[in-house]
Amino acid sequence: MSYMITSECINCSACEMECPVRAITAGPSQYVINPNVCIECQGYYPEARCKWACPVDACVPERSSYQFRSASLTNRGAPPVVLTADHPTGVKRMPIEVASE
Amino acid sequence: MKNRVVVVGGGWAGCSAAMTAKLAGADEVIVLERTDGLLGTGLVGGIMRNNGRYTAAEEMIAMGGGQLFQVADNTARHSNFEFPGHKHATLYDVAKIEPAVRRCLLEHGIEVWLFSRVTEIIRQNGSIDAVRLENGIVIHADMFVDATGTVGSQNYCTEHGNGCVMCIVRCPTFGPRVSLTGLVGIPEKAGRKKDGSIGAMSGSCKLNKDTIAPHIREQLEETGLAIIPIPEHLVNEKKLGTKACQQYALKEYADNVILLDTGQVKLMTSYMPLHELRQIPGLEDVRYEDPYSGTIGNSMRYSALSPRDDHMRVIGDVDNLFCGGEKAGLLVGHTEAMVTGALGGHNAVRAIAGRELLQIPDSLSVGDAITHVREAMKTDEGMTEKYTFSGSIYFKRMKERGLYTTDHDRIAERVADAGLTNIYSQRVL
Image (cartoon, rainbow over the protein chains, first blue to last red):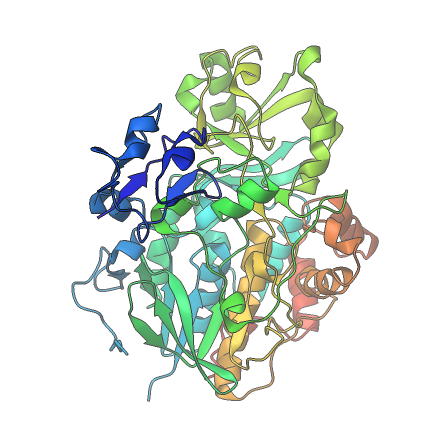
């Protein structure tokens, strides 16, 4: 598990300076935490230092649901909706053979 | 073995390509569309048949490829209608057009796949063997048409525009467009602004009709048009140069807000801060319908143009890829997308049949535009222009070459002289 920074981030850099393991860097639009480096401050502080430092509560435990919803629909695995003349609102089964390859 | 044409992208170009591919006799035609419906930016457009687009539409009808033009005519709110700089326009209803186009495609036996974003290709030697959707499904085909457009992504709009403005393209939900040409590894060109920097901004917004003063709303519904002078302190002529739609870069459009009734209200400017828009008489309570952040900007276009020949075949290390729409060059508009898409779809089937590919001669505006734009894009200056049947430099060329006419008989005669009468409705396979 690691911490993550939500889009609430205001780019103040407080978390970056506090992080004991330097897991936080400036990303393209906001600060990001490298989940492979973050250790949730275990052994350093009683609570995550970024969470403690962040003025806008943008540093939170990584939630898979947040990551999931921030991906596009098909990236989440949504299946195609296939419209044909016989089923103009969509068919249940793929009308053509598709390879999973 | 059944043959199959896969069209990637379900905007006007992709729909048009699918139609001509099916009419030409392809066994299976599949349109792969990223979002929850067809037409892409055609969902917020609406202007057809203005100026030289009339000629192009009638040429397409005479060539037997006018089905979608007729669908647009059938959903028109206003026909044979004039607005500054533009004659005999048709405005289709942006709310009614998508279901009508969808039905037309399905009735012709075309399959439409939604939520189907192509993110990978599978190659076999010099051909595309199959495309893979983002969720892993692999679809094989004999021929592919790249109709993925050139709009966005969010990053592109941020880099070259004013940021993501939450437009109809809806990149965050469905993922930004992915270029098929790009997946093949063929370098693409980007359109440029007059100052040489990359990018061109979409030229119109949609306003919510219920938020406009009743007398303007009534005028719009009755006549299709409302012209409201912009208070002097707000006039900003500089903005005109940045628009993708050069046919509307006229002074009338800087001094006035020009509103058209396309179901919602089409505002003929790239963007305008809401608080400024609300200083215009009658628009005191107005709000944006598309893009939601029309206050700061509009979508950026012409980011990825495919190199192609006059048959709409993509030039590069691939032998079964055609293109249409904005991929085909700096051609602006639905009509332009439909004519290039139609040729791409038709020639994809000719390629399967091993027949000579169709080239439309320059005695027709459709053929002339396809050739002229490809030639013009060879120069840096040409890359800063936009081309459309409806205005600016290309309409001027149409008039100079005597191509512009609204005379149906003359158009039919020209198409017949070119030997192309009903060419799109004849099977080649």
